[in-house]
Image (tube, rainbow, N blue to C red; front, side, top):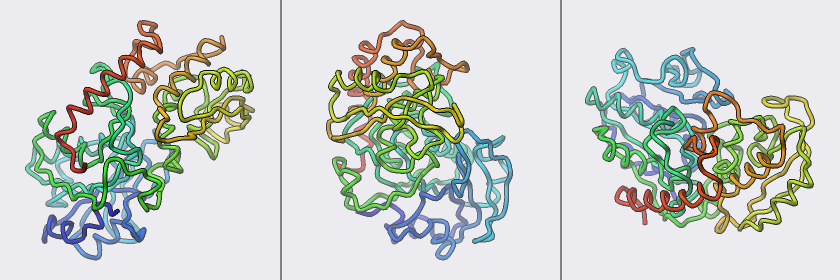
Length: 373
């Protein structure tokens, strides 16, 4: 199994002798864990680097605005942030490259911002007739199972666009093909495909080394659970940031850990178990405060449905603890994909039922853009 960057002949032929700009971060590596930036710097006319959220070296926490441009100490090339005051490619940057490449490991979640750094860049390049080359990477959550409601249009933001469901089951190259056609981006797009990949291939059997695409997704299993528990970012409940198990640990000082775990385990949700835990975040919500809650364990990744598990956890805490609050600013709605749950216009049962219909429809709609069987 090889990612697109390891498809060397096609990488080189897609670039030729043109000046190359590259959007990447630490997850952009080849099978030998050599940085894509370093490899392109040695074999192509690499002239500019662009960093998404968390920075080109992955050094910044979620939501941190990165405004400073700098010179990369290894390659001596200019580095420009696309997650600060600038989120789009300005006119002056197009003087630096003739073709724009993208190589970042995504996690298969609608609310992961790298998707929209790519789509903004595709739109900007389309306006100027500059081609885009995506070095494809496998989706760590697989290409078969779609989960979640499709994003309501009024929730469009940099953590969600294009009416994607929560778990969209496309590689980043397939996603680029989908939005390019379905949303009339009109980009001159080339996808350098993975080799030996099938949609049903579990990440654990891919032979890939996991390189954290962002500071709070330390393992591919955390990417899986992130689908369900990211919604707690929009509440006064800790989603485990500031611990070694972000998104697996969920809790607050006012929760009874054993009671919550018992409530959830009694539901007998497929492919998971809930363990009572006690933890003290080193930063983020409840910094240096003792929290009580649960750790979500995926015991069978084939049957586990993280979107539904996350909603059941939300329901148990919302209904069981008067201290629970949604935070202002609309972030909860943007993560879930709709305001109807928070506003009480849909129950958890109703939202899950709608999600099953909408996710099936998206799978059918997006299948014409698949590159892999």
